Image (spheres, rainbow, N blue to C red):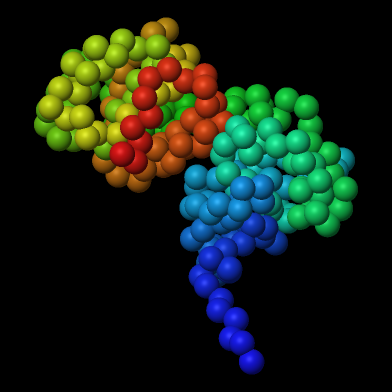
Length: 221
């Protein structure tokens, strides 16, 4: 009899029966229903079926119900067979609401705003070229945050000598609102859990907003 080899990847789920609660350990990887690629849950997007049979994005991965996972990628979210794929995974007929991509982009931008604001309130994030430069020079930076459209030359000057630092590019309005200002172009966040969370949120946002974000994506490089 020929032996069937089962690999670790065979056990990576693309659906779940609900958020992991106390005493339940969440899988470290999830598989995309469309691309079949897998990644950490914090880099993907969970969806559930709403009361009216419409697909609902669960950006915090906390909503009850059968969860279905997709890669945070425009090409995946624009797949013409998405409704059929969701219906099969949900074991019922569902519909994908119009404007799903834009609502996802807005929701993820809001999570970026919340993440930066949390860092500011915790004293881990500051804005302004000089303050950012001082923290970069002192080695107290886990992620650099730049407003979309910022001068590439000025960003290079800000990072001078520290090009290995991860950089996230966020909408200008998001960065300004995070600090309660009318204008903000640069910010930095200290190393730690909040910086890691922001980088993960940015990876999702950048995937959904692909083609609309100026500047390089250097996260994870």
